[in-house]
Each structure stands twice: as C-alpha cells, then as structure tokens.
Amino acid sequence: MKPEEDPFRHHPELRDKITDPLTSFFRTFRVESILEKHPELEWVGEFLHTDDEREQSRLEALKDHPDEDLWVFAYGSLMWDPAFKFSEVRRAKVADYSRRFILKEIYGGRGNREVPGLMAALDHGDGCDGLAFRIPQDIVDVETEILWRRELVAPTYIPTFVTADTGDQQRKVLTFTADHQAEQICGEISRDEQINCLINGVGILGTSLEYLENIVAQFDALGIIDEESSSLLTQTRARCDAQKHLLDEAKP
Image (tube, rainbow, N blue to C red):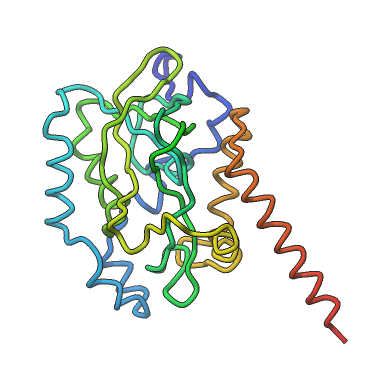
C-alpha cells in the first residue's frame, strides 16, 4: 500500500484502535438473525424500522449528495467500530452540536426495559469532537446500506448533513442526530440516572460502561479532552467503587 492510500496516514495512533470493517459484527448485522438468536428480545420487533423504512430513509438522506466520496462523522461507537469501509479517517469537530448521553438503551443492545443502559446522541450544543471517515464514491451505496442497518435499527436518530472541521478544511459530513420524538431519547435525564444506567446497563453488545470507556479511550489516543465524557466516567467509576465497598463491608 502506498503511503497516500493508507486510511490511517493522518492518525497512525488509531491503527490498532479501530475494528477492521471486514471483521466487524455490524458488517453483517441483521435484526432478524439477532431476534432469532435471542428470542427474549422478540417483543422489540414491533418497535423497529422495517427494511423498507430504513431504505427509504437512506435514499431520502442521500438524494442530494453529489456523485463523490461521502464523509461520515462519528461521535460514539462508530469511532472504534464503523463497520463500513473507509479510505481515510481524520479527527473532526462539529460546531453547534454536542455529544449528550441522553439515549436510554432499552432494546437489548446495552440495556433493556427493566434495566436501561445509556448511550450517546448528537444534540444541539456548543461543539463536538469526533472522527470523520471518508467512504470512496464507488462504494457509497453498499457501505451506507450497512451503516443504515446499524444506526437506524429503531426510531432514535435523524440522518443529518452538518459541517465539520477536519483540520485541512470544512467538510459536509453525514451524521446521526438525536430524534427527540423517539422514546429512547431523554433530553432531561439526570446525572444520577445516567450513572445508574451506565453501571447497570448490559445487553448483547456489552455493557453501557464499556461503551463510555471506549469513547474516552479513543479521545485519549488522540489527545482530546472531552470534559463531559471524562467526568461522567470518573463519577460512574466512583459510584461503582463505593457500591463495591459497601458490599465488601456487608460480607460476614
């Protein structure tokens, strides 16, 4: 591979911190196969997008996109496991939006109805650091179909084009913003509830705490200080330690 063809040429420190798309669980993700493997989640099916709804959303979002490479802005799990093929990754910042931990995960990914988990959504705010991935023009159609199957499982996000600063220039990027009409988006969630969800939320994709830890780990690799993510992680770990201490004291 020529140096100019290396996807990690701008950020070699991320080379071992981003899952190879070809080995990603989400590369072949299908709701039907998940429900088949996890019959306890059968109830979720009626709340999810159909394939036709998902494809209609994809076509509508991309209808005005020029016939060129597509940039995708990642602020959550896409930062370490995009699942789509990309030819370039860059540190990026989006103005007028913030990463907010307001998505109560109840559909079995990192939580459930009885014990919700917590994930991030992109909401209006004062700036959000993340990563921008470039999908080559000739594979945009295939790779965005994979992206939509992963991000638009349920009515939670709105596909949105925003402007991102990628260091070399301002770019139009596709991202997924919070849909405040969705049941899972809880804009007024308290800090105490966020922490409880992070401590207790677990599902087929892992724990909510692991999700937050992965976000902070990517920022550490890039030298980014994200105060909200870091402070939330610090407070959650402190609560975990306090609970463990109480349990240890209660042992005979």
